[in-house]
Image (tube, rainbow over all chains, first blue to last red; front, side):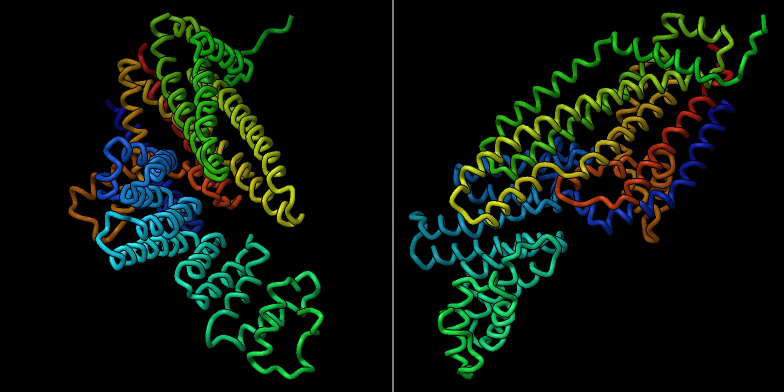
Length: 252
Length: 295
C-alpha cells in the first residue's frame, strides 16, 4: 500500500517536472507547422469511429492516405460530390501534405468543373456554367487553405497562379502568386519569368510588366527566351518606349 | 587464488540477462511479423503503381512508417508484458534472484533484451523499406529518363530532382529513431506495469489504454492549463491525465516528415532526450515497485 502511494506520488512528481518541457516541445512542433490537424467531432462523423480512433492513435497520416485513395477511386468513377468530401477529410487529417491540397484543387477546378460544363443532366447552359464556376471556386478555396497551412512552400502558389491564369483569366493575381512562389526557397526557376509574363497580360500593369521583363532581359542570354522577347517587344510598342531604349530588333 | 569480489553493479551480469531475454524472445518466433511487414510493403507498392510517383511515394512512406510504428509498439508491449509472468511461471526468476543478482540488474537486463530485439526489428524493417524505396526510385528514374528524352537538359534535371525529392528524405532517419524511442518508452512502461500486474493480459490491456490516452495527453494538458477550462472536477481529471500519462503525440514526427516538413535538429534532439528520460524514469519506477516485493 505504502509502496503504491510512493509510486503514485513519484509518478505525479515526474509529471509535474516534465510538464513545462512537454508544453515547450508542443509549442516548438506547432511553430514548425506540425500537428496542425484539427480532429473535431465533425471529422469523426465523416471518417467513422474506427478511422477517428486510428487518427488519434498516431496513424493520422495513414488514415489520410486511405481517404486519399478512396478519393482517387471516387474520381475514377466521376463521383464529384464524394471526391470533394473525401479530399476535405484528407486535407483536414494531413494539412501539411501539399500533394493533397494540389490534387484536391486540380480535381475540382479542372476535372469536376469541365464535367459540370458538359453535364447533360443539368437543365441549361446557364446552370452548367454556374456549376462550373462553383467547382473552380472550390479548387481555389483548396489552394488558398493549403497555402495558409503551408506558407513556406512554393508549389501551391504556383498551382494557384495556374488556376488564376487558366480558369479565371486573372493575370494580375496569377502574377502575384508566381512572384510569391519565386520568393520562397525551392521555387522553380521559371516562377520569376512567369510572374513577369502574366503581368504583361494584365491590363493596367503594362509599365510594371515592362520593367520586370526588362530586368530579366538584362540578366543575360539565359533569360532571353522567345516568350520574353515577344512580350517585351509588344510592351515596347504599346508603351511607346524610345527607340534607343528598346531591345535590338534581331531579338524580335 | 585471489578471492572473487562481488560487485554491486556488473555489466557482465546485465549482458548475460540481456542475451538470455533476447534468446527467449527470439524463440517465441516474434520475427514472423517481419514477413507481414514485407508483404504489406510489396503489396502496397504493387497497388500504388497506378498512382503518380509523388502519390505513390507518399503512400508508401506513410504505410511503411505507420506499420513500423504499430509493429514496434505492439512488440514492445507484448514482448515485455510476458517477461516477468513467464519467469515466475517457469520459476527462473527464483534461480536468478537466489544468486547475488540485484533486482535492478535483473530489470535492466530484461529491458535491454527487449530493446535489443526492438532495435534489430526496426533495423530489418528500415532496410526493407529503404530497399523498396530505392528500387521504385530507380525504376521510375529510368521511366522518367525515357519519357523526357527529347526535352531540354534543365527540364530533365528538374524532373529527376522532383522524383528524388519525392522518394528519399534525410529526415526519415531521425523519424525512424523517434519510432524506436517511442517503442523503448512503451517497453519500459510495460515493465513497470508488469511489476504489480496480476497477469500479462492485464498488463497488455492497461498498456493499450495508456497507448490511446497517451496520444490525447497533450489535449488534456492544454485544456487543464487553460484559464477557462471547466469546473474543478474536470480540471482534476485533466490534471491527472496530464501528469500520469506520457505525451506520445510528441513522438509522432513521421506524419509531418512524410508530408515534407523538415525537423529542426534541436527539436529532434530534445524529443530523443525526452524519450530516453521517459525510458529511464519508468525503469526506475519499475525498480521501486519490484524492489523488496515478495515473490
